[in-house]
Amino acid sequence: MSNAAAPPVAFAALRHPGFRAYFLLSALAMMADNIEHVISYWVIFEHFHSPALGGFAVVSHWLPFLLFSVYSGSLADRYDPRRMIQIGMALFMGVSVAWGLLFITGALEIWHAGALLVVHGLAGVLWGPPSQLLLHDIVGREHLQSAVRLNATARQLGMLMGPGVGGALLLWLGPNLGILVNALLYLPFILWLAVAPYGPKFRAAGAAVATRAVRSLGDVWHALREIAQHRVIMAMTLLAGCASLFIGNAYQAQMPGFAHDLGQQDANFFYSMLLGADAAGALTAGFVLESRSLLQPRARTACVLAMVWCVALAGFASTASYPLALALLFAAGFVELSFNAMAQTLVQLDAPAEMRGRAIGVFNMFASGMRMFSGITVGLVGARVGIHVSLAASAALLFVVIGLLLRFGLRGPVRA
Image (tube, rainbow, N blue to C red; front, side):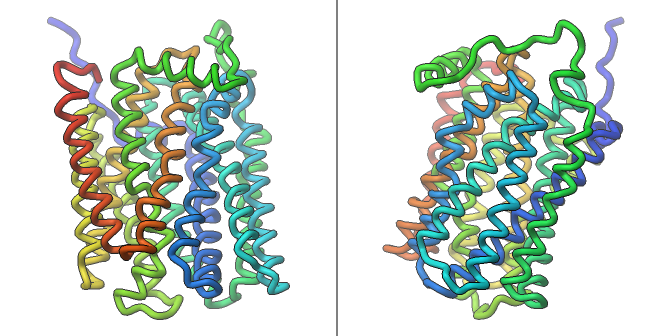
């Protein structure tokens, strides 16, 4: 008789003490990230009332991911990913302090917002690829899928708590003090990373080390050619890139406008509920799927879930009902975490150890960097035709593109 495969274990990554600490601290950092968005987006909207500025905020925020994700992944292959994440957290703290000083002095101008969002994006790219490589160090290959999904869940937990805590800080302390208090929330992650026993020094002897550095555009092109040799990695990278290109999270930057059109005129509980509904769906997905070890990673399943995401967001853009809008955002968050975590897991599992950082960097370049253009498809186009029309049209076009990928890009057997 052949040996049966061991059944999947619920919440497998949480069996590692290091991952439990990482889960909580990354959720706290993501909460701080979203508190900053809640406060800064509202102040920007109140000052300028410009959908185009909201679109520019998305573009300037995600451009560093497009330009530097492969470099970041390559550096994480060669150096200690913990130190890269610490630098990113320090930049996040500095941006929150800068917002606070601008709010207090009343000196906020459009160019200030653009510059701070660019620095915020640089902090994010120093966090993204290295954090994925650190997950592999913490839990190993066996529990990697659980770690990736729970890491995405931690980020969504922060995104869920961020709007609520951010709204509370906005109401109780005002934007000036609220954003300064927020800066302190990054500090625990920085301190833990200083002593966490992971990274190159703690890997097993003989572990593969990257020998190729990424220093130029030619090296980036070489990394892309390496990725193209792995069909699953390429398919999931294209899926994530298309989702980010057409939609990304650009509708979050336009949420004050959606809230206004749904009858919510002030920065109150109902505005925070809209911001949090998407994250609540994603958080629910993470815990439900992990508790039963559901939706094992398959490329076709990821594509189908992404198509469901398109339908939910198109419905949100089209409805004038506040309760239905909340339900559709919840559903969108549920399937978004499901297909994104699945795609990211497939990339890590399929990548050879010596190029894992570069593979993650390429994936992040598409998954995060292409969100820059969603600021155009949803934000800048929305300034011309309305944000409801632009979001619905973007979702419909993405649905068609994923269908073509499913039909032609994944024909024949695909290894999971």
